[in-house]
Structure formats: structure tokens, C-alpha cells
Image 1 (cartoon, rainbow, N blue to C red):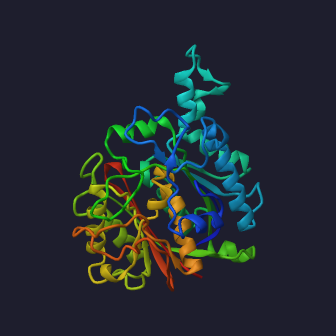
Image 2 (image 1 turned 90 degrees about the vertical axis):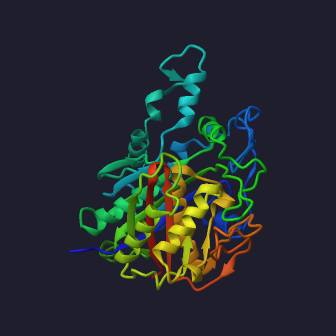
Length: 391
């Protein structure tokens, strides 16, 4: 027996602030959050820009990942009407606490703890344990570390658990805070935009910028939500995952894995040709390799519909949230459904012949959105796709 999956709550924090209203003021208004960051010395790097929540060297400390996850989790449970102590699976997409690692390597004595925080707290699975224990949730716990699809993979796995009847409730989360270790890696790979603007799908796009993001969503079986009188915000009616393993960092040039994941999700939603899709939230990193490949992948997935489905990249405002991208963009897609507004692709300038779809350039668009698809891609060729439907 297959059980329907519903969304009953969420909590979210980005550089724009906390909650849905902050996303509406920033993402849905097409206002990028990029600014010079002073969390660390950006002098050695090609750009100082990121979408960080607040300035100052103590910002990551003040916005500690563990604390931000707990706060978003409490907000999500409150919206869902679930009490701490409920039985729920806790599924987290995260790479660990980079701040703890950085403090350790910069400690003067090289001791196994820095500033009183054990380095073992940097282990990704510890953050899932901390989130579950802080919310007093009993149930299975699992951490996904597969880069930029990590939190989307957590949601996808939750859908499988709920659909198969293995759990009634799943709390899915993801988090990333801008910090120097990852910033330096992307800078050394020449992936960061040097002019402080992310222009997905534009001919003159020049790279991505990183951003802060933490979000938690509550998924339930529709029957469980009905029994306790919870109001469904949306249903997750389709999901898919595929790996093309084309290259360690570059996507398949034809978007083959992304196309397979999107087709899987559409088929599961009972809509194999995407006829009912009203919007696609793209991965849209703003890099030369990603955007053309993604466009070709969407065309391959929905050859008869791709040109008529609005597509936008919200990384143009939030920055790339890495492991948190999937869950934050899931929340953004949910708001597009409930508000009837398509978030724009900010920074769009001149069309690229390789990127020839409707990218909702620069301004939000009012639209009747019944069903929407959100897709993500990651290093190693991992791809995920999730279809949401308005109640």
C-alpha cells in the first residue's frame, strides 16, 4: 500500500533572515543578498562576496549551525503542530560543522578541542543526533553528505519511508554557513563570480557565489496528518534520483542524469510528459558548465513542454547553499505554490543560445501554480528531482 506524502511545516533561515517573509522580501522580489563578507580575511581570494547572514568575524559563531538547525526545527514543528517528543525520522543533509574544524586548526596548541568544542562535533552524523535530541524526537536518524543534493536526498528518502509505510513522520533538514575552508576551495577552482553577481542562464554568466542557508521541513503521511487535524501545505507527489557519473565536478554535457531524475519524478506523479507542471526551480548555479547542461537536460526530460514551463534559479539571490540547497529551494518552491508568484532569475542580462527557455528574468511573475518541480545536481553526477502539488 502506498501512502501519500504531505508537507505540514517548515522553518527556514537565509541571508535575508528568518522565515517565509524574509524569502518573500528577498528571493521573490529578485533582490540578491551578496555583499563583501568579513567573517574571514578575503584578501587572498579572487572575490570577497557571499550571501552571508551578518557581518563580522563572529558571525558564524553567532549563527552556529547547530543552533540554526535547532531553531528552524522548532519553527517547523510548531507550524506542523507537532510536539517535541513525537516519533519521527530525522534526516539531515550536511557536510559537518566547518567552524569547529577551522577553530581546531587555528588553535595554538593543536589540542583535540578548540574553544571548548570537541572536534568530533564536526562529524556530520553528530549534527543529526543533536537536532533529534534537541527536539526530543525518537525514530531513525540518518545524515546525507552527497554535496549539493544532500538535503534533497534527505527529503527523497523521507518520501520513500512514508510512502512505504515505514514511518508516519519525517523531519528533513539541511544546513550550510559560509566559511573559509569551502570558500577557498571554490575560489581555487575558479568557480566564484568575480564581479559580485550571479547571472544564471545569461550569456555573460561568470560563476557562483556561496550563501548561508538552513531549513527544516516536516513531512507526514496524509492519513497521519488527517488523523491529528494538521493542515497540509502541499503534497510531494513525485520524486526521482539518478547518477550519470560523467565527471567528478562537471555535469554531463547533455544533462543526462538530471533528465532521468526529472522523468522519474514526473512518472511517479502520474505525469510522465510534464503536462501538469507550472514551474521549475532549477539548480541554476550560474556557471558555464551547469546552465547549458541543465537546459539540455530539461529539454530531454520534457521535450514537448520545456519551452512553455517557466524556469528560474533562486541561487541568483540566495547564493549557492551547497548541502542546504535542496531543502531551502524546496521551501521556496512551496511558497511559489501557495503564493502564486514565481521567483525571478535575478541578474539576468543577455540570452545565451545554449540557454533558451523561459527563465523568469529579473522580476517576479504572478502565476497560477498547481504543480512545480525542483531539481538539484551535485559533484560526481548526482541528481534529484521533487514534484510538489498545491492542496
